[in-house]
Image (tube, rainbow, N blue to C red; front, side):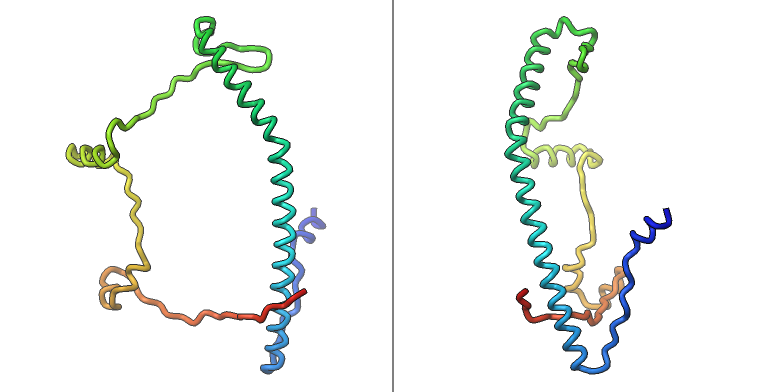
Length: 168
């Protein structure tokens, strides 16, 4: 078990030390090459995945159509022979066929009308609301107003490394 855990750990690379701008430029070049390599690997993987998906779709279309036809025929047969069911289902050699009772709410009017009627009857518990803080809109307020509602504007410098394109 210990060997498997050792293999699962990532190899530790030595720390990269940068003494001057020339060394930083060299590391930046390595970063550009690494990004290009990763992009190439990802592109090749994506192409393989798309091919596998296309192959699977081509093979599965016939099976999916056969499955849908079989299920439609079984449903039609079961509904036509509902009187033969033992309760709501019937056990067969390869499984069970039956009818499950389900209930759903159907809106007979527009959503706007139903929402208005629910509000008028104080049935607010039947209305879904997803409330969340809109940080982008909060950015329009001054710091004092932000503080009054328990927020603070935080400004920080984010590192970036824009590399020139590398052709492999």
